[in-house]
Image (tube, rainbow, N blue to C red; front, side, top):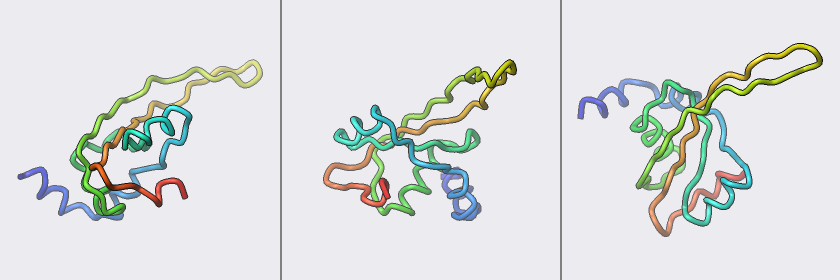
Length: 105
């Protein structure tokens, strides 16, 4: 329960700013039929923090969370090469019978 107390101490708006945007790809659209939604989040967020914020914002019950930190990608612009920063992707499964209608708007 100490982790839940630390969540209450942080402001919901502060945590909400760390959830960057929903990932809308072909793979994530196929997962929507299985009640999975994907979000790109800040790498510092933990699973309980992600769960707390999304339950408060979308008013849904989250049953499962999987996260992955994706590797850097090399990008090239002309003769210059660089790397894109690493990011964290969260796969959220919600309870059966519930939907995130505001997710796609």
